[in-house]
Image (cartoon, rainbow, N blue to C red):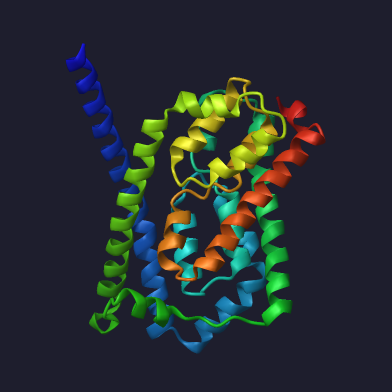
Length: 297
């Protein structure tokens, strides 16, 4: 019996290692292309290109919210890196983070959820993300005016020796962040294994109002296991659509890890994460209070 338990434990650890490795490898192309773009903007971009990017700035949250609808957290990781270099605004970053779906969409589709439920959840996340993004940009503009790019500061902090060339510098950034992501994802997945999915389900079962807050806090955990658990609970009828939305809105996947790794302003990071939780909790609660959950159940 002990031998079987040991083999099962070892098998799960192997699965966690493999899952963490696959998650990291999936993000690599997004990270590399993002850092190539940032290097081009810093060292080779013409004034015309810079002006074009600045001109698109006011509508960037709209594009960010639309990209987030694609079930791939690579966009959130790219957005986090671009924000750390101040290539995109805070509003655009938050729009991407709030609209990112992670594992929700594939699970809902494979579980044959009602099309109305799928569309409502996906578009609700996107619309909320876009609206909050535009609002944030307006507030930040009134507060301190136009921000300035500091991609060179990101390079200096990482010690990447940009004089070696754009591709080598981008590769250095990519591998540095990838190593961090692998270790962090491995630690998080191991923690979920130790806590157990059943325990997470028990915490969220039939807790009025508090379920939205708990889901919003759990949504910050940068692991697809959380979005999987929340979506399955919803599919089983153990979680309201509002509580699901509360957990999915803050869930930006590995984008959260990339933000914490690349953006050195800890206070700013804490404010962003707090905002994500607050938005998730408020809109999840409103979702249930106005009866939207019953309409798509």
